[in-house]
Structure formats: structure tokens, C-alpha cells
Length: 291
Length: 273
Image (cartoon, rainbow over all chains, first blue to last red):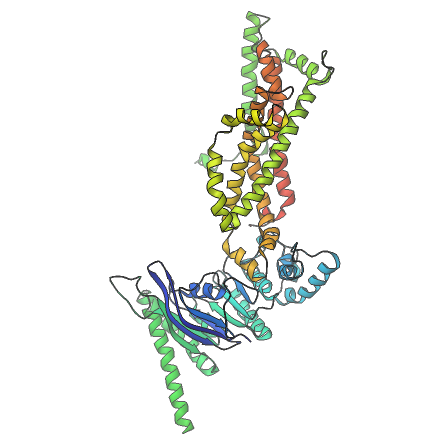
């Protein structure tokens, strides 16, 4: 179980407010996509969840317990870059989590213990399709393979929450599609709560069970730093038909977004107004039919 | 249209030729001037003929000294290399321990880095009299001079490189449950070892400089001692081969350290990382 509750969260650097007034209740096992214009604090929010940084105000709790002040193995992470250890082979990268847990002094297992640990992770390596590359170094792998390695590495400690910061941002479309299938599979199998930052709306809406759209709701033209972003839309996607409808409309909306130029915030606002309207309409029609 | 000069590359043989050219030019220049001076005065000591140098080398390297019964070149080499090895080893150890500690632990960085920065600015040669007074005239003071000369550089270089480790990697290690100690043994040490060896390669020049200086001022043996001893007799036939010998050893050390790097850290050269 890992219910994430955020209460009145603020984060600012000096005078610059990055995030303001964030309140969220994320049920255990949810797959959340964090979307929004660049520089809107999605990644900052992820770093707060990771406890890489501390909130200026407000609290984050997991199952009612306040977040510890530093990263812990209950929250795994996959970054876009520098996500695996360059000096370790695929196998060594993945088994590392077990070595940390079982060899407090050296952080290294030997002999029979090492063999047993390698047997334990063999299935994980197989599942992410890296068995043929077991003894290669990350520098010898493609970008997609490195990200699969990073995910497998994060899963070894069985985190209750998996945080991903634009994990597929640098991958080509074909590789992305494979990664989506893999990530959905792993998420179902491990019953984790997932938070994934992405700038690709389609990715967010097709993968996630809930989309959190970050954006500024208050603007001060004289002092653009005075107000931060908040969670402007919190859209659960538990209805398959609804998800399909939104995803099918995305290319058209993306096209208008390009024509007008990516004015900060506005295309997003229109998109989510659209998503919100779809929800409302469906709910209304649902209510009508149920009456 | 010929290629631009920036796009024209020498082949294997060409590279060898161009690489050898400056050496051959210097040799030719020496031989010419040496022959000119010797033609004027057969007893000239400044630019001895190659045959004279060869005779001296045979005497120094293969014949026991009449007075002490020792073969001078090897005695000197052994003494100098021992001092150098101690100095480099102690400096590398200090660089690794203090560099990692100060690069990784903010409290230690706050405490150590201003001090190390100031110490690194003290001219080591200015401290030599103090070292001779406090550590005596024998081995210890020479080793300490090398350490004072190069350890601050190694420490600062290592600390900077530890700070430059992508924070993502340190965070990832923490999410895998690593303690600070485990982060040091599994992440920092293995990735910093090649950087330390590179820094050590750059320190070889200064290390030799401090060694020769210390030996020149107070020693009973050593390469630097010998060079400065025979300077009084204008014995260029001794000084020149000694300098060449020192250069050769420095070159071999540099080459050896680079080979060690490739052996111990295969991930550096495999693929793009």
C-alpha cells in the first residue's frame, strides 16, 4: 500500500515561487502522468516526492507517514539521463540493489551469495530483454536498452512508488512503443504507484490512469516569478472509452497548438478544458441514462 | 582542388616520420655544434662527443666506482625512485581519502576546502628549509617535499571531480538503499580511480622537480645529487645521460599509468561512455 497525500505544498527558490498550493490524494497503485508546459515545476514536484529537495511549506505523506528527508529504497527512480552506473555491466547494475541490502560493509557479494543474487535477478533481466547483453557496459547499449536497464535496476528493491522523469524523452518512436508495453506490464505486475513526468501528452494519456496537469493559474505581468504552478487539472482516466476519445482528439489539438505557436500555458489550458468538457458531458449523459 | 590542410592526415608511417623529426633535428644540431667546438679544442667539456658520453655511461652504469665500490647510476636511480615512489604513494592516498571526503560530505568540504586551497598556494620550495630543520636531512624531508608539492593539487582535483559526479547517480544509489560508505565503495571509488591516475600523471613533472631540487640541496645519493655534484667539473658527459635517463623514466611512468588505467577501468574505452 502506498497512498500519497499532498497537503498545501509550496516550493520556492528565493523569491521565485515554483509550486504553490498543491493538494493531492493519490490512491495506491495509481499510474500518474505529470504533464504541463516546460518550466512549470513537474520535475520539481518529482524531486520533492523523491526527497531530493524539501518543500518550503506543506507536507507529503505516504500511508499517513511523513516523507523521510532523503531518498530511500521505498521510492525507486528512473531519470532521463545518467540513470545507470557507467562502470558496471548490465548484470552488475541490476544486482547492485541486492548487494547494498546484503553486504552492508563492502556493498559487494562474493561466491555462492553472489551467484544466488544473480539467479534472483535473472528473471528481471529476462523481462526487460537484456539477457543477451548481460556482460556489456552501459556505454555499449542503445538509449532504449539503457532505460530498460535503469527500470530493471530500480525494480530490484521492490519500491512501492516508482518515479520517472521523462524516462522516454530521448528515445525514438518505435522504441517508445516497446517501452510503453513494458512499463504497463511491470506496473501491473509490481502493483506500484507510478509518477511519470512527460512532455508528450499522448504518452501521458495512453499510459496513465490519472493525468496531473501542472500550470500557473495566477499571473502577474510585473512579477512573473511571484506565482508558481499548481495542479490545474487532475483527471482520472478510469474509463476506457473516455481515454480513447481524448487520445483520438490529441493530434488535432496538437496541430492547433503548433499553428499558434506554443504560447505558454494556453494550448494546454485549451486541451484540458476539452478533456474536462468531455468528462462533464459523459457524466451528464451517464446521469441521464441512469435516471 | 586539394583538401584543406585541416583535413589531411598522415598515415602510420607518416606519423612516425613526423614524430621522429624533431628528435632527429635536435640530435643533428647537437652533433654539428659538438663537432665544431671539438675541432677548435679537443678538450672542450661543454658539448662532448657521443663517443665520450658512451664511455662515461659504461663507467657509470656498468663499472663499480673506485672509491665506494658501487655502480653509481643504479645506486642513484634506486635512491631517487624510492623517494619518488613514497612521495607519489602518500600523495595519491591523501588525494583519494581527503578528496573524496571533501567532495562528497558537505560538512567536511566546509571544513577542509578553504584550508587545502590556502596550503596549495604555499610555494613548496619555500618550505624546504623548514622541512630540513624539522625532519632532518635524510629521506623523510625529501618525501615530505614531494607530498607538500603535489598532494594539494591531487586533493583539489579529486574533490572537484567527485562534486562533478552527476547527482542523478548519487540519488539513484540512495534509492537502491546504499549507505554513504557503500556509495563510496561502489560508486565513487571505482569511478574516481581513473581520474586519480590521470591527475597523478599530470603530477609526475612537479614530483620529479621537487625530488631533484631536494636532492640537489642535501643528499648523499640520487640522480639530482649526482647532477649537481658533477656540475662543478662541468661534466656534461655525466649530466646529459642522467637527464636523458630521468626523462626516459618519467615517460615510462606516464605510459605505465595510462596502461594501468585502461586495464583497471575497461568501461572507459568500451562504447561511448
